[in-house]
Length: 252
Image (cartoon, rainbow, N blue to C red; front, side):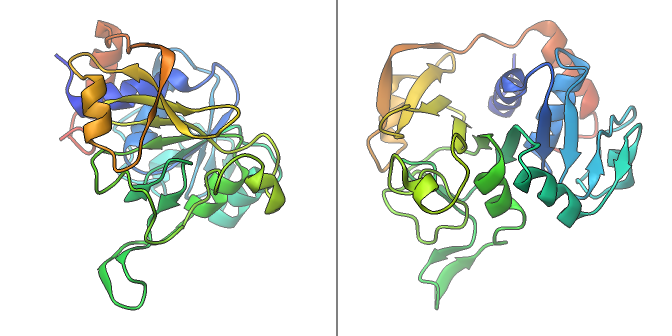
C-alpha cells in the first residue's frame, strides 16, 4: 500500500508531459521528475536548480540538485543563474514549488512566520522560488495541508501566484498564461479556476473526504462539479519509486 508521500510524488509525476522541460528542486520534485523519466516521459528535459540541464541519473537518487549526479548523461553543466535565465526566456514549461504557507490564489510564503521584524520562525527565503513562480508556464506546488499552511493571508509573499485574482500577474509585468497549475497535498489535487483564479479541488486521494478539504484550510476551497478520486498508484510506479529512493532520502 502506498504512503501519503508516495501518492503525492506519483500524482506529481503523472502531471509531467512526455516532452518539454521541467525545473527541478530538491526533495519530492526531484524524485517525481526522475520517476517520470523512468516511466512515461523518457524524453522529458530536467533542468536542475543547481545548473545541470538534461541529466538522467542512473544510480542512486541525487541528495540535492547541486550534486554531480544531476549532470550524469546531461547536455549542459551550467550555473544557477544560467538555468534561471532559461525560465526567464520562456523555455521551461513546468516548475516545482513548495511552501510554508499558501493562499487561495496560490501565492507562497517561504520567508518568515509571524512579523518580519520579530518572526516566530525565520525560513530559508526564496532561493529560486520567486523566479520559478514568475516565469515557468505551469507551476506544480507540493506541500502538506493543514490550517496553518493553507491561510487566508500570508505572513510574507515570497513567490507569486495569481496575487489577488484575475489579471494581476500581467498587471505586475509577469508573462501572460503563466502561474500556479496544480497543488498536491496529502488530501488531494487542486487546480485554479480559469476565471476566478481561486484554488479548486479536482481530485481526492482514496480515503479522504470533502470534509477533510475544508477542515484543513483556513480559507474556503471551491469544489469542482466534476471532482473525482485520484487513480491509485500501479505496481510499476510504486516499484520504480521505491527503487529510486532505496536509501530513504525522500520517502523515509
